[in-house]
Amino acid sequence: MLAADSINIPSDLLPSDGRFGAGPSKIRPSQIENLVKVSGTYLGTSHRQNTVKNEVARTQSGLNKLFSLPKEYEVVLGNGGSTAFWEIATFSLIRDRAQFLTFGEFGSKFASSAIAASHLGGQSVIKSEPGDAPEFKAEVGIDAYCSPHNETSTGVAISPYRPAGADEGALVIVDATSAAGGLAVNLSEVDVYYFSPQKCFGSDGGLWVALMSPRAIKRAEEIKASGRYIPAFLDLMTAVENSRMNQTYNTPALTTIFLMNEQIDWFNENGGLNWCISRTSESSMAIYDWAEKSNFATPYVVDPKKRSGVVATINFVDDIDATVISKILRRHGIVDVEPYRKLGKNQLRISVFPAVEPDDVKALLKCIDFVVAKLNSSQS
Image 1 (cartoon, rainbow, N blue to C red):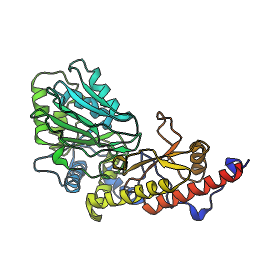
Image 2 (image 1 turned 60 degrees about the vertical axis):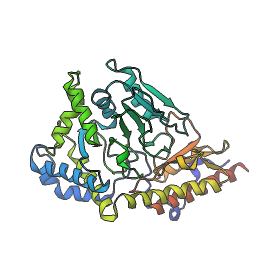
Image 3 (image 1 turned 30 degrees about the horizontal axis):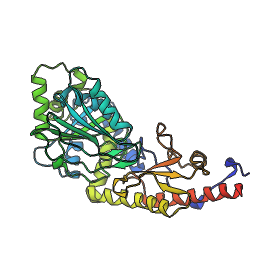
């Protein structure tokens, strides 16, 4: 039998950049180069001064343009990433009861945060098995409807929407961590669209950004005025007030903000969100089309309408070990295509955020074909 470590992929098959990770994701060289150019005046400076405040304003104006924000929506920033925002929503956005769609690891974690909060009532959770997604069911007394836009762990995506029959004033809160900047969204259907920048925005983690409707901000104001205990770090109104001054409450990671801004500008200069979606669609469809024609691989998500355009998960037949494939790929500089660890599937998970070149995705597929052919020949 041919040993896996003896399989060498020809250099002419390899992608120009082998980073296909679900986050931290590929950072383009020009982002780093531009950071170096301003490092002497930007890094190591006070985040209360214009040098940094101008960068926060750049983030806000760039996202406003990218998402064509509805009138009076605000771009709010804070530290801690999307994980922190789950807790922020629990303290500052959910009045009493929320409904959660859970169809993977990250949606279920948000629901768990609310369930554990002693100051809230009983939560409503609608769950589907990994690889599928449920739908909202309007309930009396639900004041917030919460769901991921894209489930990073499974490669399932849904279109955010406001459920028919929901109580007046109920909020729609969407975790867009791996979707924002790569999937289509109608923000008039959403009150809070929050994400962190280590996915589509080609930056590092530790920052959260929320695109918020006026009524979401009003909800946060009302809850704070009610006297509910809110830890200072999780106080959404404090973040709103600071964001209105083009700053964050706590010192932010300046590199993270700058790299994100470089990506936002790149998106907008090339055609905005529609351009981003065209790139992720080209890449993801190449993967799904390849898998459907393959005799050893199939798309993990059965329903084509629920297949993610930014994170593609592909199952392999039992006699082809995806773990072996990923190890051979990694040895050749093609990294982070392993499946989500808790899912436990014989599959590869390939992220195709806008920075990933569609031609590199097609090269990756040729590399997988080459490796599988070598593995099969060793077993015959």
